[in-house]
Length: 221
Image (cartoon, rainbow, N blue to C red; front, side, top):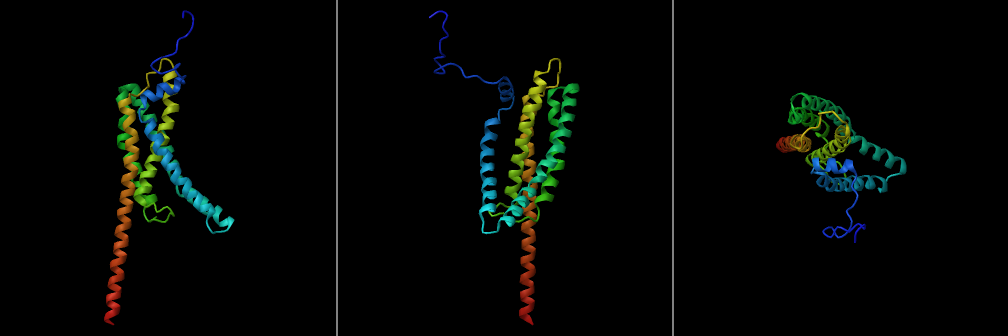
């Protein structure tokens, strides 16, 4: 009838309200749903680990110290991400303003691997499979990469939605330059974890050969 809003028959009802900031960033960041699902898995793993730390057979004080030690062992991710992301984002936005939206990717393409690979290796090598969940360096590196990418995704929501709403600023990177940065974070951390795992395996192998040689020498005596 005239004067009455008709429901959207295709969507089987009135169209749902979507905030402007989400519609803008969701169109520009198509990996949102993928990283949401990955983050659920990561949150489950880390919550399981923290839960085990608290309900184990230790005393209360030991559980508290153990849980703080576990969280502190992952705190390096946030420290390095803050410095690297802030620096490269500023450089990328300046490059976008002067040379075009595709220039946003260049600082991340070179800067993230140069910093994140050695830093991930240094923080994970020698850790072994010490966690109760059995997470070794390679898996830790992948999880660190997911956290790096997720933090970048959240920060991009805030920064680029603000830039988009600001009138007269030609600083918005293109989708082709934003999306690959998440893979760069993930792959760089995974490479660092893989290198740390190789170093651990080689160390265990060297220790094994040393032990065998010592036993052989002892048997000869």
